[in-house]
Image: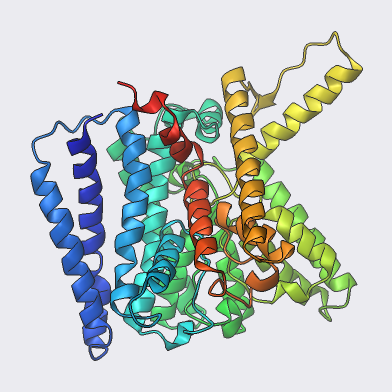
Length: 490
């Protein structure tokens, strides 16, 4: 393990994050200087520290090993979260500088970069009271985090054999079966281009729907990254527009699709969506879930018309499933069966190779087929049944990896939920707060519902939830592997 190379790479990442603060800084100056000093100070601190570290670590060969790549990703995400908290902390957004307010700042920053969208704003400080510069930085953390996730899923996770992208590559036709591009850097650049195209497309669509430019940019940053930060206290509900709801629903759905499929469709003009098994499952499951929720809402009389039930039901279903976390209604006021279904949807996620969080559809399908095979074996003990995904046999190593991921995911969910109840939270709040954090969803139920926030969570609870956000965003293995003795052996 070459420490200088790892530190140098992380410092370059932090330096880049510091440079991106230029946009909020310019906006702060344009708006009369509010929060300009805090952002400028934060920017200088980041650029100075990371610049010194980059200079000190120059000269190392840039060929990064598997272990070094994993360490850079895990530590890099934490360091970015710490530096990203500075505008909130230095600007004393939550009040005077203190350990508690730094944890609040760190929570908001990590929630942004991991595209979770859980916020501590809303109780002591309302979102709409923030300056546009801080709001832009807050939304920008989503967009930058989404870019990082794209690199993570195509470059780092396959080294761990996590399963999702292996399944995608095994069944995808043409160049995607190997890689979109022969090198990781080219692959990342290609997918970032797709990311940029989707970003521009949504901004234009929202502008045409009547949303102001600044609002369109911020909500687009949160949508394409499946993040969920809104610049309104009551999220997208504030606009009360069926057209805006429809546009954001569409782009939330698209953002949770494998970005390689978008590339093939946009630039290769191939009809690759329906040819992909995971997309077919994702599309079908989404439609079924929308119909279920909408039928419950209409049948229970929550909405007077089937169209209204479909509008609000589809938005909330897609928002939760894709782990975006926007809201157009307080679903805690919905029938309990609808709330239970939404809680289940939090564990689904979107497609592998997307910015979506949670378990992911590919893993869910393979696990379901694995369970069915074991039941089939009980009935027909002499039979030989294989598990197929996309017409290809799922190899034992991938199946074991997916099973291991699921066990760790549910294990962390259980242990963290117990911790949250131990610090005084009620069971519903504890369970859903952890479920939304590890799935990078955002809003939960109870005291952390869609009309609430995470400010009331004790500091120790926020630290636990920060760990859950990181574990979920980095697909668990990337962090857990660092805790093994074998990882640190030469």
